[in-house]
Length: 601
Image: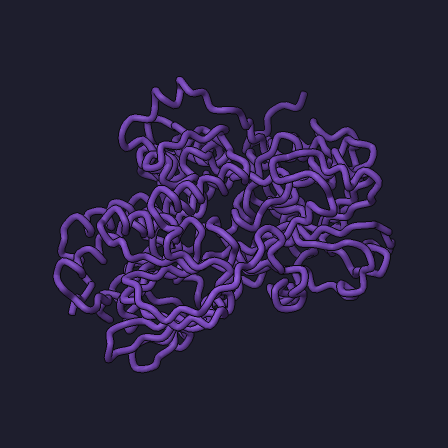
């Protein structure tokens, strides 16, 4: 048994050098452009395998509120609007049903990696108790449908529909929404919630189009080929198959144990290991849930989680998971420093020590769970925990103990090519029957490119033009020159990345409050003033730099594949006081009824 690593037993200079060495192996000049867009380069692989497209006539009608995106953002905003008495709501969604990324991600083992109690929105409003601490994808997808049904959001929803144009008509004070189905309908208000996890990407590998076997992206899982289903039934179609999975991020961490169980042979191609800590998933108990589910329980739990990841010293930890463990370690180290010496440098040193200790524990976990010492070494993550999205799983590391499973560690170089027969890596061709791309979604690309349209605001100015010098909003939600338009996303608001649904629910509360106020006042438009928008940006710049995304980290979507965010970096931040400070600020702003910074006309 290893003695626990502490700050005094860790050679920090050697560890920093090791981190830098591993990062440098993975740096690529092309950054995010190393990937291909699934829908553009491989349209046949991007087709919806889950729901047939239903023909319909184009719409040219009028709605009070149109929301672009049918994931959590559209569902929660729609629900809050309905609760506020705004009943004429239309959600436009490119998938065949509600769910967003949870509609597409049906790969085996898919589940949330933030606790269900705080991750799944509107649990209290729908009366649903999650079945597990970390719910699996089918339950989350069903919950999305439950929200849609509970709040009557199916009535005017447009599925298998993508917005291609959004233009403000100053004369009518309305938005025109155009889609790929020929629609051109009007909306008084528009919300945008296209999110970062809907444009699937593939690695830009030579020969990727030449493979003669079966290939698919994890967001388009082909159960007709593999057998099984999203609920976890054995994939009997793989019993005689050699399978390659490319990528070892959060998706692969969840899918690999199922592939390892069912495939004849499984090759896991790894450029960068994920840090994989314990998940400790378990069913939730009915009696326990009943004891904690008093009115307002979910907001209490969400706020408690945010508090435990913040800079304060909360009295309790309701969620008590891998996310809060790191934060508690950081606070414990900080307690050893007298408050009079809480300089930024001392605080960063305390945080660094806690991170080193935690990552040493995670690397030791690989040694303890993986039988082959070389494979265990290759699965160790050499970077700080928040350099990449932390992963938690109870079966991933153990999957490499199965005789048919082989980790192909490429020492930071990745797969070099795809051939007609398989995958090239480390100078070797691995012949396989099936290639699964666990390469994720576009996150660090330009917002307009991901959304698929460029909003045209007042005086014909496009959003891309207005944001040419960087993102500009009030509260991360309102944009000057774009009346009656709302953007639902974390940046320039709470920026609480560990639990994005918390950000979404809060923005939905704000949208419902603002729209209700506009309707009660008989206003045609609501829009932030230029002065209020600038004042908000000035406030954001007084805070610390981005907490994640340093170019000292190994490349990934947190740091734009190692290239960093350049001049935009100070704009992709949250409230200088942290997530809870933002939530408190915006709650008081809503309740005041003055909506300072907005102009109703």
